[in-house]
Every structure is written in C-alpha cells, then in structure tokens.
Image (cartoon, rainbow, N blue to C red; front, side, top):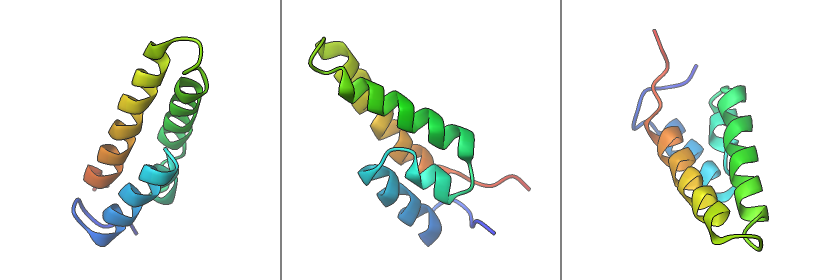
Length: 76
C-alpha cells in the first residue's frame, strides 16, 4: 500500500518522474495520470524544433509530474 505525502515512496516516485515523466505516477499505481504526463511531455519535447512553445509546455508539465508524484496522498 502507498504511504502518505513526504514518505520515501513519494520521494522515489518523484525521482522516477524526474527521469521519465509519468513513471512516478505509474509506481504509485495511477495509470491514467502516468500516461497523460508521459504523452504530454513527450509530445512537447518532440515538437521543440517546430516552435519554442511546445518545449516550454513540455517542461512545465514535466515539473508538474515531479511535484504531483512527490505530493500525492492516497485516499482513505
């Protein structure tokens, strides 16, 4: 079972999301947010050569993925 905010599990999840966006959410058992973060950041970074804006959006969502993994609390 996942532990609360600030637990070592959340620290590991945040580090995982730092290296691969969405991996921390996947570790926490949250499949849809993991897929959303991974695809959004991946598409944003992949389109950096088209425009500057997708890369910025990708970066901001990447940071959001790390913060989300670090601060997530299971319900219950």
